[in-house]
Image: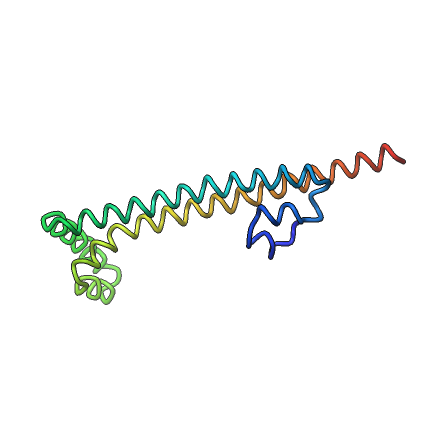
Length: 146
């Protein structure tokens, strides 16, 4: 496996400098696939976050939309009373602006977490794919040269 301290900083750089990826062309292919994986998932996360920010701004600009969103938040907070009464009290006492932000941010945070976990899983698959290719190539070369 690659050095995960490098892979955590940047899987693209980590793929190029990893000793277990075989020759340079294999490392570059791995880096390219890692870069595409990063671009795809980071783009999705950025779109989600920006969409949430725009939606929050639009809702807060409209008093009727803000009131409806706060009402929806309060309904959810009252539902939580059955499971966590102290938390429910705190949620109901929050200012309306924070209720709107919380109602929009919670599902976005869940979606960003899901997308990030998919990206990390895919990063591991890519790393393993090119590590395996390098091992097969090394074993083939040893067999042919022996």
